[in-house]
Length: 169
Image (tube, rainbow, N blue to C red; front, side, top):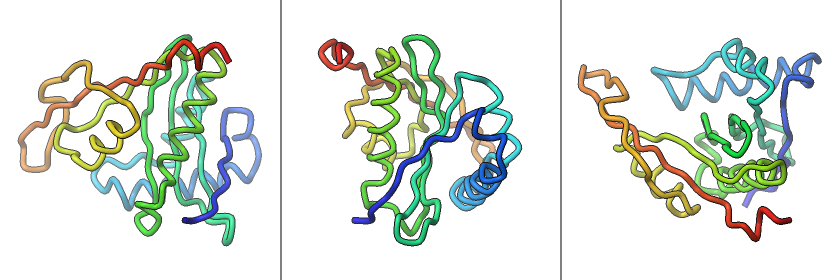
């Protein structure tokens, strides 16, 4: 398993030059993983202009390469995962799980009662990942995603509630 370091990038940290490098690396991963709907560095940076949007990212401690990230919102009692991704050559090593756990702990510590997300109904790997982490389907957005063959795919809305015992910490 790869030793990683998890760091946070938010509105205050985007004022330094290091943040530009991180945003460029995030956009590069996006373009490789989400070919047809990748977010650019400018789009990601504009998300961070809102105080409720955040990014945590993982770097490989050995070579300091950015290898994964989670972009999320946290407003009052709800957190929402907007994107979570790991570089192709680092997948299946528990990095996304560590990012998800870190994000959930940060949000829960600041009052979140649940985490929401949406996922394509045909993204079986993502569905299995989220279910493994305690997410349950709560709704369907019919024909939400446009496919490249002009068909549509439903989005599943999932949530993971935090139990009261964890919220009390």
